Image (cartoon, rainbow, N blue to C red; front, side, top):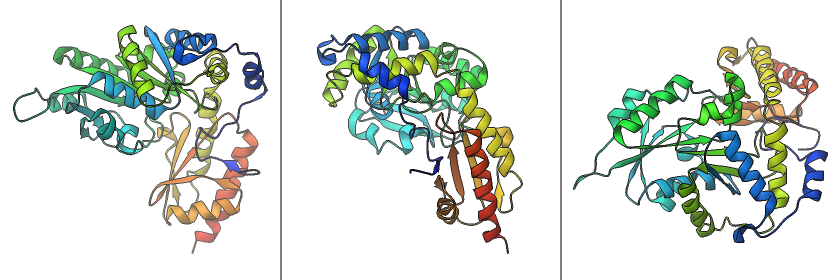
Length: 345
């Protein structure tokens, strides 16, 4: 995508000089054997940031989520998910194949399921039906435009889960974005959960990797599942070194991504044939609703040097990240205006 303003995802970022220096300086060992000191340092830092007891470094957010389901549940158990959640929508049916769970879905308002509806969906095991063992929450919510789940709602989920003896898992791929938007530490957002998946390769800029966090006992079993799924890496300290850079210095700067996303939402709000909602653009994802098919907009924008994805027949998604500048925002707005003239009767 050389020369393009790349708004396809915040996963497209490239390591910078600080990360390359960290890679070169990282002491390494064999992480599967438990003796890579840089991986251990990253995992300790991840536990500190999230406020959970222990952490496991894994190759991807999908693996992190799926390990969590497998540890929390037995095959045939039921889980509750928001109906457009990443676990359900973008992980290729892995929850049915790996953990073998039944997925009950609920609608939401901007990613937040009604706590009362969650409680009403719980099933106790009997001869005819599976027991509900886990509720999964996505924060921020990808397909709802980077929406932040209110802290009050998370507290209600925790109270309901405790009442019914249910576990809570956070798909927190962009939980750092949620914390920055709320103006609170990451640990405040993760406090309600039994396990947390935190992605290092989205807005935090690492080239690869996620952290799965939970209790010591949970992580001990998660480590077995990582090995079972082929996620045990050897001298992975060269990757973990980037994660340390991300967690130490890249969280607060997410506010810049949020600012640029807001500038895009405001700048596109009154473009002919488009509709955005600056009020609902809370973090680094902008949903742009189009009168003409989104795929046509995507191609026309590519011709103007802007890359993005359709996420529905008439909706584009723009994602800001650390490799973008204010000049890229201006170029993007100019490209949308230029394309809009071609769709205007």
